[in-house]
Image 1 (cartoon, rainbow, N blue to C red):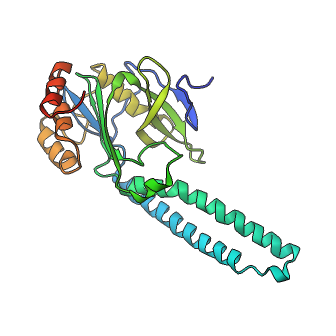
Image 2 (image 1 turned 90 degrees about the vertical axis):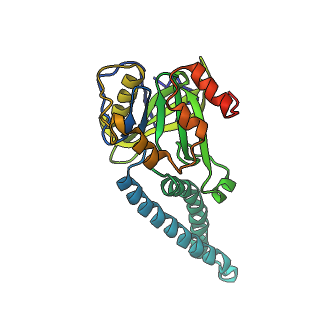
Length: 278
């Protein structure tokens, strides 16, 4: 049975249900939670270091292969053209274009890893039903990108979403290790038409990919199955959390205030004060 959220995302395993969930675990992803909002990081430092190394090696190898193939193509001697030499040339051309395509995939992954700071936290406010992200433009599940965006590695997207329009799905990465990711499908209101994607919990083993989704749902439902002190920072450490994780990372001032908004009217006042279009 296909996903009800269309267009269906590559590697789809299943759609996730909203509401109270007994399958829950904040793990090391939860940074901070209070009665208004919670913050999850989506990249841990050990993963960041590992993948920077892997993707850097892949980019270097790709560049070397392209140079070698280009040298083969430029210096091919058509005067001594034999079937064997022609086959080598054809293979070189194929590898040249295949490597370009591989770099097209790997470079955004390298950007995503290098330019993701403080774990790229995602903020859920259960009083207003809003979700906030401030992340690298490349930190998503998108494959097709304008190559010109590669010239802007620091490009960000900073957005506010409605929790009602976000729906979870689990996808796999086709690896031998069966690593899964939880993606938030951003849909048009009251439809299943997907208009954007947000990475919630990347690269987890098996059932682990469902735990953060379960915790977030319990939080948004004000379910007692979770503890607001499960995170790195305890309830009373909000100032420390904002100083160490939020400050200096480009979050708009209005958005940081909106984390603590308790009603939609209060949120509207915050936006009006900072001249933000609703």
